[in-house]
Image (cartoon, rainbow, N blue to C red; front, side):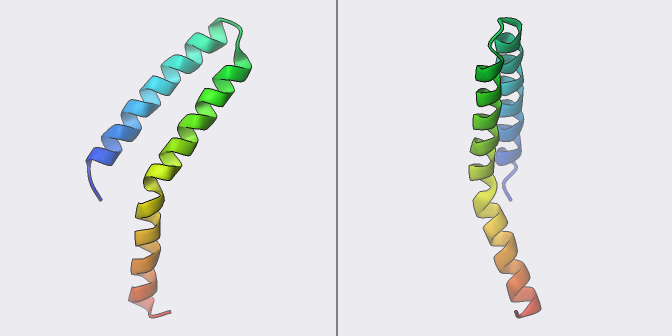
Length: 64
């Protein structure tokens, strides 16, 4: 696993948090929720290959 993916996720988390706070204070709770959801989906798409690789390695290790 690359260390850069951890930094990407952390940077995105900080950016999403800032956007979320700005949107909530301006009274746009729906957009804040959508921004948070979009950030979550982006992170899931980033880690999906790593999860697939983990499951392949576990399957190979246990010879399932």
